[in-house]
Image 1: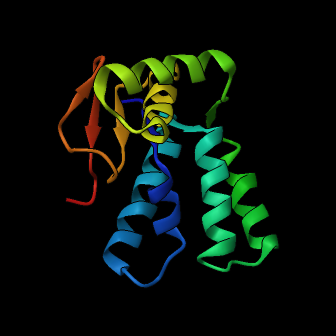
Image 2: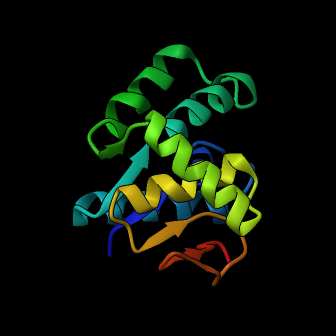
Length: 135
């Protein structure tokens, strides 16, 4: 099943302070990459880079290595049309604009699921199922 992986999954894969979440994140990344149904958005890569450098304090060389790996996933670019569609989701569904961009990227990428812990588990937005894989 095509799934967009949200930023928190990429971040947890590189944090050691919660081994359970780290192992789950690594499992999700591996399974979705090998299955050929992993989707990322450019926004997610930008957010991951920011958190990896600022909060995780990963060396830039390691961040670049991660980005090189994640670029092999199917990527959904942030376009003006995607931003306008996300604005509609923000208005219609009461999502924060940030979350609406992630949801819209998943929809634009043809995903059936958005894997995130940032939105309410089980909710559907335009047919997209929100799944918290850490429950």
